[in-house]
Image 1 (cartoon, rainbow, N blue to C red):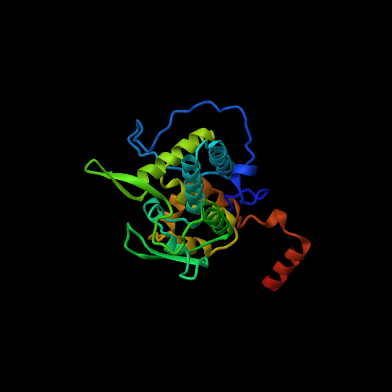
Image 2: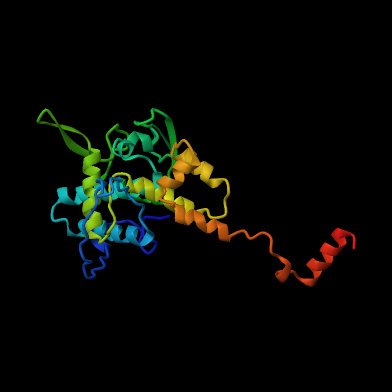
Length: 272
């Protein structure tokens, strides 16, 4: 899964962002994770490839239309957040707290693997940087002359405590607000929230490994889940999708479909 469109290499968005302008899709009432009439909690869904591409174009529109350096830098930060979040599969609370020192060695070279401690579980977590993540990090560093030797946050922002502004990383509420706005601008009709990036990572990983019987266990470990069933549910693999496996294996009632060779083999097995 690549969040960066193959037709473009990230060098300078201001010079060569291409924006596809289409008709707006009708608005749809959002669920926002609230309880419905039946009392069930509406869960966030993963995003399809088309929805991801639409959101990427929306992010690029923000970059192209940024009228000031501050707006451009914020738009670039948000795009970096989107691509990194899609490709590393960590929780929102861990995503917003990433630091440049997590990604770069002391000599300024980019790490292949990043190690963190999960906020929710206090477990040690290692994730690998794929090509999409490396490309967007390199672009951002070159675009803004980032000092990667610092312990600064990737996604800097302001929060409030007792009415006072505190410099640090953006909050998960800000992350959700960013994703919701871009999702709405892109015409995504399903609810979008902080878990959307991680769920999308899980779903696309499952779809990318259809014939790997052991992959689900690996993905369970990547997400630090307690069981494969939790991982399937998290990725949005529902009961109806699991029912299709009944069609994949058909046993018995072979008589009408047996070839002459198979019939001969059966006779030999029976000793006739």
